[in-house]
Amino acid sequence: MTAETETHVRLATLRLLNRVVADLNATRDLKDTLQAVVDGVVSGLGFGVAAVNLVRADADLEVAAVAGNDELRKAMAGQIGSREGWDRILAAAEPWGPLRFLGHRSGQADVGDIPSWIPDLPIADHPEAWHPRDALLAPLHTPEGDLVGVLSVDLPVDGLRPAPWRREVLGMFAAQAAIAVDNARLRSDMQRAVARLEREQLALRASEESFRQAFEYAPSGMVMTGVRGHEQGQLLRANDALCRMLGYPAPVLKRLGLGALAHPEDRPLLGGHLGGTVPVAGCTELRLARSDGTYRWVSLRTSQVADGLGDLRFGLTHVEDIEDRKQREQALVHEASHDPLTGLPNGRELRARLAARFGLKAGLPAAGPGGDMHEPYADEWAVPTGAILSMPEGAVVVVDEPPAAERRGVALLFCDLDGFKHINDNFGHHIGDVVLKAVAERLTAAVREGDTVARLGGDEFVVLADGIGREEAEEMAVRLRRALSVPIPAEGLAVPLEGASFGIGWAEEAAEPEDLLRIADEHMYANKRRRDRAQRRAG
Image (tube, rainbow, N blue to C red; front, side, top):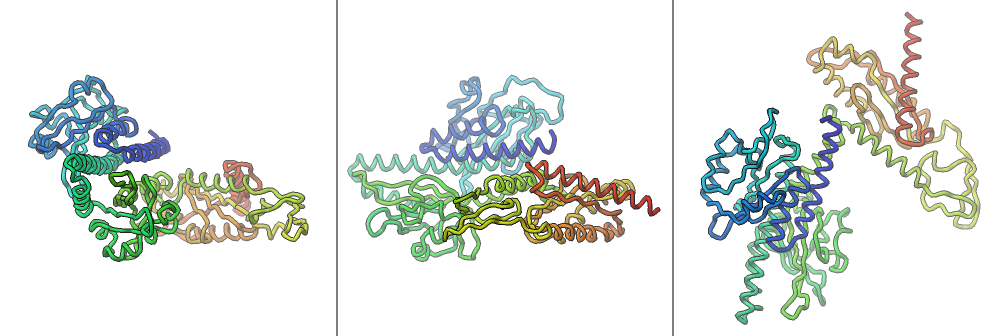
């Protein structure tokens, strides 16, 4: 698999992960949640079968949900394994981060009273091939570390042991699945308690006490919000877990409300019906401010609680800390869009930014006789010569094209290092990598704030500059060439660069992003050939 193909697969898997987690959070009862867990693994995470072994009240584990294979479902559904047996298996398995791998050579055949299933799978010769007796397990723990179940997956679709990044995705999903299962069990327990108390004619008082205890002692954050009268939109109560998460005492949280703590960019996600405090119902993810001034990603899942007559009493919001998961997702996105050696945006990210610029170019409002221009024109491509603009007072202005030296637009500077192959040949590729990192740092330091420096690959770099004039772009190319003329220190050596060739392309010359890259590349090679001819004549 090529690096680009793997990047596509990772991004596609991350999108599927977001989708299956959303499906998981949308379920309500325990049975649907468990089935959503195994269906999500099979549909989106690259495994052919999956099963959830749920911890029962007597501590043993029961196969409660199966997906992907009718033979597996018939053989395993409802089977029970002892807690002691599961503890022994998990302790013997090889840790893969939060996962546990039990290889066919580690004694999986001795599983005791643990339900097992061996697929009819040919044994391949590939060193990383998945063996029929291999097993990959994901223990499902609550935030307090209590085991609520074990997710077992098998039959990877590519026939190989999952790569580290796929294990990480499975681990992220397992963490969310554990929370969902734990919450579903809590909801199920609370519903049964309320039903039993209602049958005993003590529904109101007992359910309030049961809810109070579940609310106060819940392991994750919870808030109650008023929905009627003068309490509408007010935060009525916050539990200890939320106070610890955000670092505020309960009275301060009640006075501020979650709306005041939301990151300014995330406030539109909050429901205006409840005074902008929390969403009316459903699930959303946003950042909340902590008392130390930092922000933390949380998931808000809100439901509305009614009394025995069906009248709404309050909104109940579950606040789950998802900071670690968000950081992992952002790390995956960054890896997919940046060069691993230099840390610069890669070709894919550069093309995305170019596409955004060309999309703006295509979407600019046209102005004609009597037309309105609702947005200011940002670049030289925006106002064609002789464009007629209507003014608020009804006056008409004809915009003349400014002199070429004064026009500002989007420039692409294509940079190719001269003689870089000689550095690899003479000093080794490890020195070449040091040189490429130094080139990236020097280019970044020499451009303007807001300009993009990207690495296309090899010794080719690109600078994307917006709102720049012709002379300024030429001066930038000279400045960048000078920055690269100084020898680069590497492991006690002063490695000289033979020079760098630059070519400048302008967005107004191109119809598509690839055209702009091609134009700048052609100009760069033309400049390189002129310099070579000049050097030969001088020699």
